[in-house]
Structures are given as C-alpha cells and as structure tokens.
Image (cartoon, rainbow, N blue to C red; front, side, top):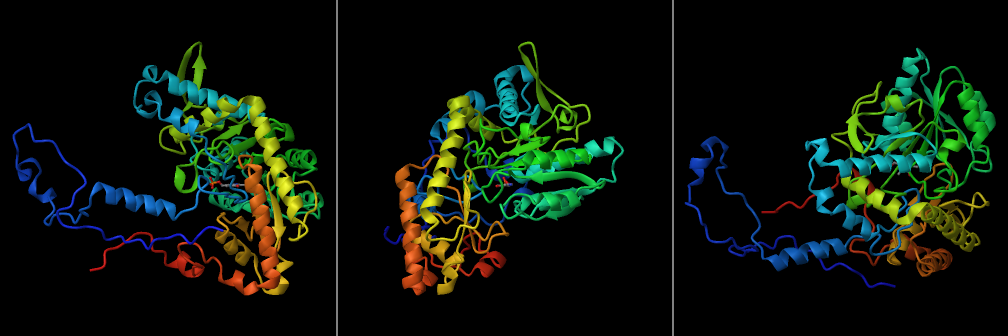
Length: 487
Ligand SMILES: *Cc1c(COP(=O)(O)O)cnc(C)c1O
C-alpha cells in the first residue's frame, strides 16, 4: 500500500528581490512607459507578482501535479469515461511545427496538409461508423449530441414535420442525452430497461408515435451490455418516421467489429478524448465529431473539408445548420486522434476492442462472488456491480470508492447508471497490463473483506490521500477554486 502523500503545500513563497529570470542588456534606447502607453491605460499601483526563483516555481508545480491522480500515475477504471493511456506518439505528431504553428486564417493553399488530415480523419470515422460524412467541429461529446439533435430538427423541419417533438431515451442513458434533448427544445420520453438490461421493446412500442423525432441510444449501453434487439429497435423508430442517434462516446467495445450504421443508426458522435486516446479531464480539450448518413450530410455544420483532384478546400454544406464552434474544431486533438487511428490500423483498432472487452469480462468474473452482479451476462468494454451485499454491514458504495483511493487507484464511476442500486461502473480499458488488473481485483476483494470485518475503516477512508473525505455538498456549493492571498 502506498504511503500517505502530501507535503503540506505552501502557496506563499514570494520573497522580495528573488527572481527566476534574467533579461539581456537593453540594446535599444530606453523609453519611459508613460510615453508609450496613454496614462489612462496604466495601472496606478504595480501588480503584486510573486517573486520566486526558477527552482521554486518548478517544485511548486511538480508537487501540485503529484497530488493528483492521472492515467500516467495509476489505474483509472472510471466507467463510461474510457480513461485509456494516451500514447506519446500522438503528442509528437501534434507538436510538429507544420501542424502546431499554423493559423486558421492562412490561405488554404498553404495548409493543404492540415486540410488533408481533417478530410482523412472524417473519412476514417465514416468507415469506422458505417456512415457517410463527418463534422469535426463539436468540442465534446455533449456538444456532438447537441449538433446531432440540431441536424435532426433541421431534417424534420425541411420535411414539414415540425410536429415531431419527442426524443426517446432509455433509462440507462448517459445524463448528457436528456440534457441535450432539452437544450434543442425537444421533449424527453423515457423508456425502461428490461430484465436483461436492454431496451424494453414493448415499452418502446408504446412510446413510438407520430410525435417521435428520434431515438438516442448507447450500444453497448451504460451497463456495458449489447442490446440484442438493436435491429428491431432501430427499425421500429424508422418506421414511425424518426431518426436514430447513436451515442458513440465510448466506442471502445465495437471498433472494427460492428458499425452503428449497420445497426440502423443515422447519426453517431465519437469522443476522440475517450475511444481515440486523446487526453481528457484536466489533460486537454475534448473533441466530439459527428458522422451522419448521405441524406443528412447537407445539414452538417460548415465549413467542412472537401477534395477535388489533389486539392483540399473548405465548403459549406447546402442546408447547413451553421457553425457550432469557432474555426474547425480543436485541431490538435484531431491530429492526435488521427495519429492514433493510423498507428493502429484497422486490425489494430479491432484488437483494441477485443482486449478492452476481454479485460472487462475477466475482471467481472473475478469479482462477482464478492459483489452483487445485477446482470449476469457477458459484458462489453465495461460492467456494473452493485454494493448492495455490503449494505448489510452499513457500508455504502461511496465508502468502497473512497477506500479504493487508499489502494492508489481512481474509483470507478458510482451511483450510475441510475437503474442499478449502489452501482459501481467499472471500465478497465485495453491499455492496462494484466498485473494492474489483478491488483485492482485484489484491492476490491480486500475491501469486500474489510466491509465485513471492519466497516468503520471504510467509513473513514481515504486516509492515505493528501486530503481525507471531503464534505461533498460544500465542495459542490462553495468550491474554492483558486488560492487567495490572506493579508
Ligand atoms: C462521456 C459521455 C458523454 C459526454 O461526453 P463529454 O465529452 O463529456 O461531453 C456522452 N455519452 C456517453 C455515453 C459518455 O460516456
């Protein structure tokens, strides 16, 4: 077990006269600042900047970084988030000057390589999804959802079917789905899950009707289960005149194995910052491209990259819903995802999914005798356990999650999906070696033992982290997000 981290951090390190820079001798005539800048733009008092040496700055930030958990530090099985390792080759490619120092206002002829990269990435995502055309603009998964729903709205409007105002969503959906639906002004119609964890097809039959604008679905769903009735489900909605939206944020289980287009979907969003290994959380901006059918391509946000002969250029789709993001999306993220796709190739991407699914099933089977497994069937890239057996000892899922921090791993997603009591949603990803997976299994088994023998220990966890158990209500309502100088 790791030792308690956390040298108490001292934020106030400024000492008058200390400095971390040295400027060369001035080799131009010195001009007083008030001759250069009008007086009304000058501050009255000098700024209070910290006076610190270089090594102090370095130590301060390095220590801060060590108080945090990240995938470069340890296991991070946060379900529905795909916290896979971010290969460094992606970073090397994104840092190439020809890609990192260009500007969106440069003439197209001088950035043909960047345009080609965006064009090819769109093509790859189309191939992976079994659909036709992509926009790379959305900056996150939820942003992709919003974009896709705006496309659905524009499509129905053009057909004079504005009476379609309902989007059907299963109860296991990611929280962003209903939020995005509400943002475009549609109504959410929720359908329950059946006893196998899939969409309750009878309930769906009752929900589908003339007001149906579409269905949003994640498959495999947030329980990590593949819906066996998927083709019936999509056919039912299509027959009623609705469109089908696939939430592909976590496509980690299906790359090169099955395509949303073949399941009957019209629109997919991918989270490049999950499935395609670009950093997320505090590590970098996100990217949530959407891919659509040929029929919906004219509605995509513009501009999109097109190709004629050897030349790449921007063009506006004919019935475009307009921009959803400044310029062309988070370009450096696109570069990293492109590097990931090319470095794996199609066989490699398929292997990503095979190993992700294998790891999840191995872990699930090795834990199901100590934690309740609500849906006992083969899972895909993640699985959901329940802490309800531990409840008899007064131990809640939150306590299990907090205790895991003492074992040096990030906790899984907890209390989600909502349709499982005391849920623990675990996603190991394919990038973990077996040793890390076995260590996690061992930690979870020990915690199950502790729950029986020493539940108080779990209530007090975590004890080995820089800070102990936080008051979560206060942390949410009165967060302290920056250091402030106390006089
Ligand atoms: C992560 C996730 C989203 C949202 O993605 P963001 O980039 O966080 O907006 C949507 N759906 C599912 C299933 C997800 O896992």
